[in-house]
Length: 102
Image (cartoon, rainbow, N blue to C red; front, side):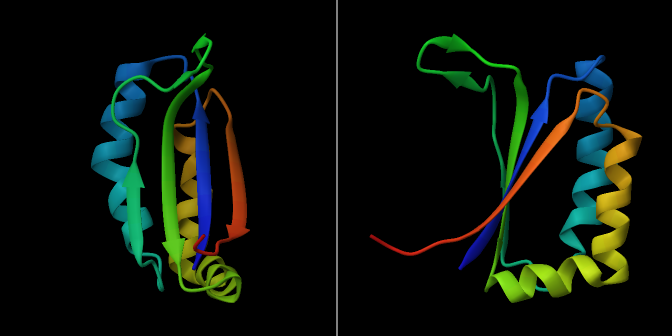
């Protein structure tokens, strides 16, 4: 499996972010071809030392890195990537990686 970890930094308006994310971005992202699983953090995102600058974490799971590449080359993947500018005004980091069970 391969994953995309999306770290959404604290937005200017948390409530507006949450509303847009739930009503608009989740349906757009769930339409990405090849998406096997999609989950998001619930509640505060903290560090062992206390608060963090991260508002929400999303994890998208695909079969492979090649599947991620194909997914984001698709019209649905491009739409999801372009949608970030509509609500992620605090900034966003995307980490893409392959996984292995241990």
